[in-house]
Amino acid sequence: MAKTMVIPSDLNEGRKLAEMLLCQARSCGYGEDVCFAISLAVEEALINAIKHGNRGDASKKVTVVADVGPELARIVVVDEGGGFDPSSVPDPTLDENLEKPSGRGIMLMRAYMDEVSFNRQGNAVTMIKRRPAEESKAES
Amino acid sequence: MEEKPAGMKMAKKGNVTVVELLDRKILDEFSIATISDKIFALVDQKSPAALVVDFAKVDHMSSSALGMLITLHKRVRERNGQLRLCNIQPSIYEIFAITRLNEVFQICKTREEAIGQVTA
Image (cartoon, rainbow over all chains, first blue to last red; front, side):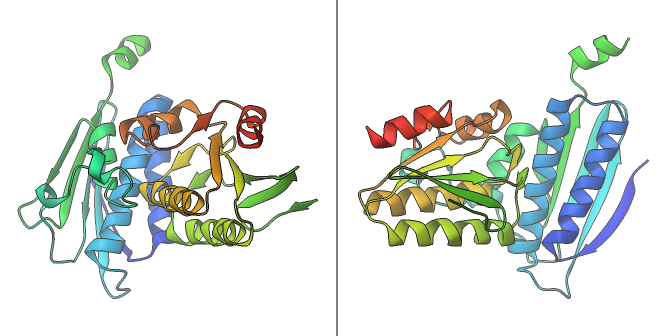
């Protein structure tokens, strides 16, 4: 069942929430690779929401809707910012961008999760990670 | 002699400074800023710097930490110094590979190998 949590724009709060979701994923029996992926993607999404979305404004909140079940984890992170166009973020792996210090968060989220999508406004990201087939087989 | 600022431990090995990252997770702006301020100060003091950053204890890293390393790499290069990263766990190495930063940084398997390369 999905659980909704609201935190202030504070990186420490974000870190605590990410830890909590990691514990949930572990208690659902996901392997270390999946837990690493969920944790990394959630942390990147929370940093984006707090830093770029809400621009660190303490009066703005970040809402996280998390449904971590035995077969998949679905996590939505919503900020109160104006949103952005994800297609406008340059590819950090192009030669000309390799030495730019920023712009890798979304790429890592996409690399580690099975699905990453943004709402039209660009202030909410939905990330899905499914239990890999080999983990299901190992359990049965 | 060893010095222990928050999140890192510095040790000298001849002309080489080895920075061992002590936090398991290098994620948020504050801890990244603390670490980078110390390392950047060191690079600015000693020119050319010979620097090894040891990741043995790190099992989690954010894209902001990658950004800090890129800035460090540029700064060391501007001062004709040398930087090596070492002891990177496979899960963290994958982040470098996905972002192609394994092509930007010189990454060694062990601390000894890294020290050997910057003193060579």
